Amino acid sequence: MRLSKICWVVVLFVFIVSCVNNKRKVQTSETTYYNASALKHENAALLLSKLKQRKFDYRWISAHFSIDIDVDSSHTSFNGIVRIRKDSILWMTISPLLGIEVARVLLNKDTAAFIDKIHDKYFKGNYDYIDSLLDDDIDYELVQSVMVGTNMPFYTDTSKLKGYYDGQQYLLSTETRRQVRRDIFLHLTIHPKNDVQFIWFDKKDYHINRIRLEDFTNRRTFDAFYGDFQQFDSVMFPSHIQYVIQAEKTIKIDLQYKKVYFKSQEETPFNILPKYERIQYNK
Image 1 (cartoon, rainbow, N blue to C red):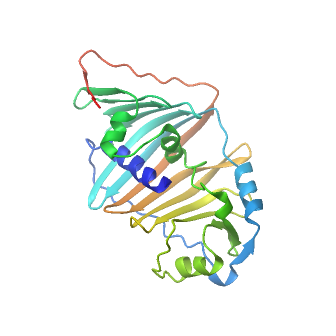
Image 2: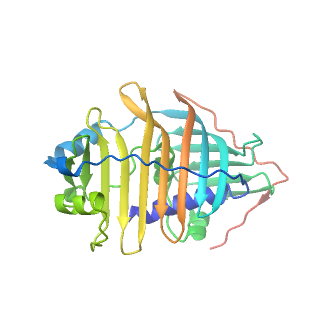
Image 3: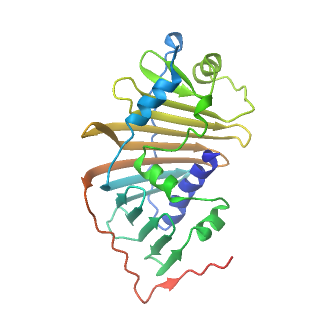
């Protein structure tokens, strides 16, 4: 299931920035979206079609961002710059609040590379090294999705999705109407055999407001909240994204984009100085 891989992508970000530490607690969204009495059926195929039509499209994104990460009682805050060429390249710099760059990341579909400027080390190779650290297969597509916050490939079997409207926004879920009301409105802990997915999105322009995945077999949940939307052309882009993972540890990430630019071309410098020691990986 994609939930496992999403958890590990978040762990990957925590690993890369573990040398940066600043105390600041993440405050997650408490917004209530649901209206149990108003929940009614909608055409799931039509809603999914509308959702896909509004899929965010771009060539290059360049943005300044800040991230706050809580892993149980451990807190980390840092700033950075990210440049993404859709489905091709993800380049990122990481700096603590003082503004000194401590790490640089460069990813494409085949290669993962990062520079640890604190310890004068670097890695460049395929994803095998990262997979070995996380004990799971990570791909470029998922890392890009976590950073951009849209087009996240959650709905693996769309035939199982059911459509609803709660009086405020649309909902696609793998659960029946009775199960949705039980799980979301009544908060009952009756665990189904299969994984559960929820996607809430706006009733006017169909941008995604929240995604929730539940893996009861492994006792894990993933929540993504999208807010502070900015309009670019005809599509809404979320400048504020929050992720919450409940597993063996509770991980909360607050991602805030400060400046967002959409360009036809960008630079992705990645210079490895001779003094840097290469991190070797042998299968």
